[in-house]
Amino acid sequence: MVRDACRLISETDLALGTHKKAKLVEHSVEDCSCSKRQGRVGEGSLELFAAVRSRCPALHRIFVPDDVWPDFQQWHRQPDTVAHHRSILLLAMERGHLGRVTTAVHRYLMTAGLARPDVRQPYLLDLRERWMLYSDPIERHQKARMFSGRLVELQCAEWLELQDLNLIQRSQILCPMNSC
Image 1 (cartoon, rainbow, N blue to C red):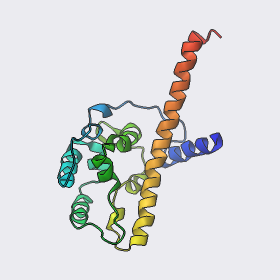
Image 2 (image 1 turned 90 degrees about the vertical axis):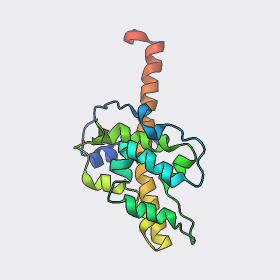
Image 3 (image 1 turned 45 degrees about the vertical axis):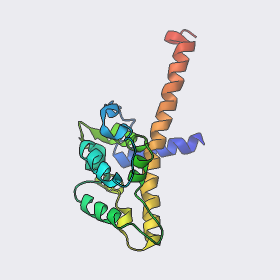
């Protein structure tokens, strides 16, 4: 399991274009509109998502950029009746978990509200939520799984890092200043 986790981190580093451990730059994702729970969401969820998207650089620049946004809106105004697919980001917002989806992107792929220059363009393109635009439900399902895989990859990297930080913090409490 640890070997798989290390492979995941190294594959993520390769995709990001960093072959060594990247120094993390803390972002104020807590202040971003995507991290705030959006009251009661009902029929106007697409309009609320538009408002959140306009204030969140991860949503606006990476997940649903301007070239994807018109098709994203149109598709959600005429939802799928065959497979009942829905946007992962829109569902996350409706359920109050949008911040959990976007945190890793803010943390690893953005700096100063823009995509980091060392992130490879194909990796950013994979994170655009446009899978629902495919007409065939089976192809749409496959593309949704690929999109979800990229999200989970970043979330796992974030979780592993947080676990490492928790271990380091615990060891410093138990054994301050490496006195053990």
